[in-house]
Length: 274
Image (tube, rainbow, N blue to C red):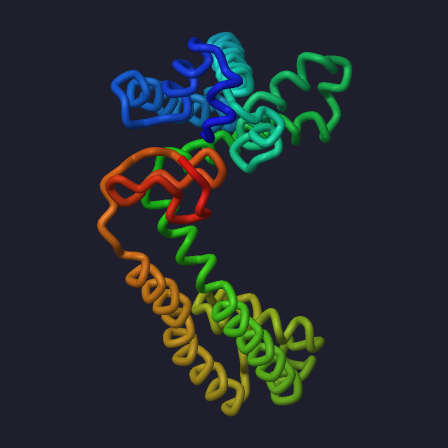
C-alpha cells in the first residue's frame, strides 16, 4: 500500500486491511487460519453433494451449511472491497475474481429459483469447487512455483510444439503401417493413439497388430518416459534459480507475493512499494 493510499483511508480501514490482507500479525494469521478451514469445509460440502446417497440423507444440513458458508464468504468479499486501497483493482484482480466465484453460484440459484431444473444453472453451482483456488493465496510455495512456471513458459512451449510434431508424424506413420483393417481408421484417430502411447497411458481401445506396428509402439513407449521428464527438469532448474533467503511474509498489494527479503521496501516480484 503506498503512502497516498494510506492517507485516504480511515484508521479502522487500515486496521481491517492489516488483518485481512496481511499475514505477519496475530490477528492476520488467525483470520487466514479460519478462512482456510472455511474453504476446505465448503469444498467438502460440494464433494458430499455429488454423492447421491449422502445428499439425500443429509440434504437439509448440506443446504443450510452451504448458505452459511456463502454468507461468510460474501462478508469477507465485501470487507476486502471496503478496506482495499484500490477496490476496483482488487475486484478485477485474479484473487478478486476467485473470491467472487466463491459466492456467485449459490447466489445465482437463489436469485433464479425458477431456472433450477436447467442444466446451465446446475452447472453454475459446480463452480463452487473453484473455492479451492482461494487456497493459493495462503500457500507460500505457490508463488515460487508460479514464478518458475512463468520463467519456463517459453522453453515448455517450444517443447510442446516438438511433442505435437512428434505425435503428428508417429500417428501418420501408424496410419500407413496398420491401416483401417487393424482399427486405425483415420490419421486423427492414429494421432490419438500416439498421444496415449507416448504418455504411457495405454487405454487399450486401439492396439497395433503388425510386427512393425508393435516395434513402433515399443519405441514410442520408451520415448515417452524420457519426454515426460523434460518439463520437470525445466521447471526444477527455474525453481533452483529462484532459491533465495526470504524471511518476511508481507503480502504485496499488487501481485500477491508473500515472501520477501528481510527489510525489503519493494516487492521482489513486481517492484511495487510495500
